Length: 480
Image (cartoon, rainbow, N blue to C red):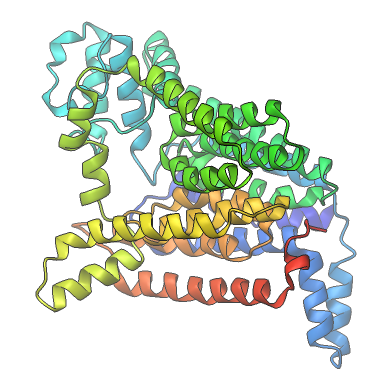
């Protein structure tokens, strides 16, 4: 138990930073989270590390003995799950310091409370006289502190429902901090759902339950969700269900599993639109299985569910989103882009229209996703399904104009089953993107981005070589 406690203490600097630090303290952020990632790697991959060193240092007896002693540390899955809860509980009471997004969440909920669609009006243009008494004071405070007052809301209907619940509590107690705590409660419950789903799938398929710690003890997930209140665990819960039940349907051809797949996929889209990138792959597999009627019903049902949810926010929805909403977000916002930054700077260097970089990346993403999805239409094993879902998200993220740290959390969840190392590596490297906020005015540091993506592509290459070294029958087998 004592060695476990020592490793747990490695997470405390990250917790302390969340309470005492500021977003501009970039180097302090890195130093505070480095021990957490060291402990995380040992907690999750101790067996693999010991095997690596025992093979690599056969002639160095002292090193082998050292790692043999480390491997005798008492390991308890229950212990680390409890420690994960403790870390999240502590972070629960911290203020979000790396992002002001939670204030926009509460603003959207406040508008819904007043019968105003958050998609229909810019915060900066809203006449605050629509609020009375204490509501107006809260609205003024939210408006003054948020960073997105010039843009329409881009958050889908399911999230808006939870924003409404959080705003209700905020108004009941007349306190913004209470609203944040209610919202964080939703996130913690969602994370419990993610953990439970992971353990259920691992157990049913005879896989090691300790692999659930790849997500549960990941410092990035703890920092960005329990600490900074991003809504990703809601998406993750539905993403896991969508991929798992799709695989199960492919194995057993039961209509019940396919309906569950549609349920999880639809609600995933209603929590964040990114699951749409999985649709070509899903369509190709259903077509390959010659389930044409099922494909039609699937498309129809998904469209009906999505439109029914959007109906409640229909007021000028599509017009506003094209003016200064999600369309503008994908075209103009830039943060920690990978290939996008390379293309943009290349176009700038040759005197071309570098504003086209975003559209070129978007079109390239579509073409590659279609080609890759078609190639993977014969997937069969559980590992293959999660590997393909992970690869699709890799394509999307590497060609995106904006990659905030919490955007990569789906990769972490998928890697529980794919066994790829690169998502875990990126979860540590992506923190260097916060170098953007260490200077005023904010600007990306190409040095840090080059370092981030340089190391990342090295590990992507390692993953690719490992996969390529396996014969097809081995690669298609499930995790052991």
